[in-house]
Image (cartoon, rainbow, N blue to C red; front, side, top):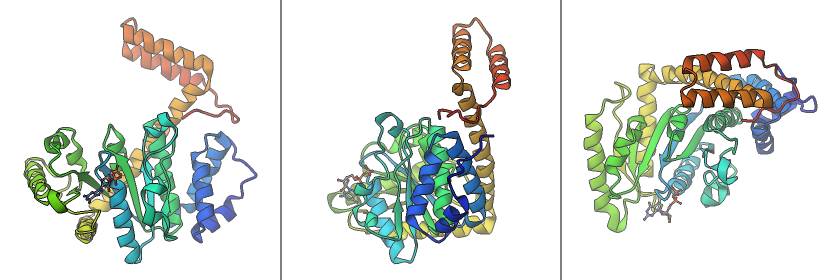
Length: 341
Ligand code: GDP
């Protein structure tokens, strides 16, 4: 285990976070996102200290293709929640940010009203490489936000790849946003996205779009009835709303509350959180083991060679796995090493 950076006073940092100091919260998230092994050790210790102060927020995942209105929705929903006395944190999982160097999600400029509010905290996606790495850091940032007193955490993601599953795996409620009549109704079903969704909300139900939005909602509704719902205590509703005018934002939130009530009563919420905790543990372990394999250039080269042999058919996957497991056993983690995520 690497030792943590002794210059960081974790006790006072955790106190400041619990007292709701935003600068301390931002500093702690930066610590979590740091790739330095001593920073990561400090971050782990900090999270363990703050653990009792976490877990009470409503964790809501929001997905949708670019242009569907995620930022407009989060801005409107966030303002609605602030008016109702909540403190709202907005986080994002955007694996593409690792490639582009900047996240397109969770950017303050996209949520103009909300970002000006002191009861809201907006943080863009960490740019930490793999989806697993990005998701892990967002999960930890979420815990820090909870410790800082944010009682609603909105986690945004784009409707691509595995990022939706990652966000669904860290939230209590997963909301899929759709466009009216964009011809992607059935595409959404194919992608399996709606199987993850606890609710489908068709945005832009205003002006000329109103009828098309209602038609799209009816189609989703019909499609959902063919699928087996994830929980026997909750059937995902489909609704229409307008993030631009704010019409339907209250009903949208009411559904999130109804879901919570139902999931609490059935014990499904606690079960979902328990399953997630264990899944997080394994995915962290997986990431750490992979980081260990990447940390040493010799081992990295041997892994690549093994991969190539398996790909060419010269080595069975089983022998390949044996070989890599051996490499893992022989690797010794240097405390000063900086494993790449
Ligand atoms: P994101 O890429 O999913 O974050 O989408 P944005 O929130 O940036 O919205 C994309 C575009 O759709 C912007 O031009 C918004 O003004 C517009 N938009 C968002 N919500 C609505 C809505 O409810 N009604 C209408 N008519 N336009 C909207």
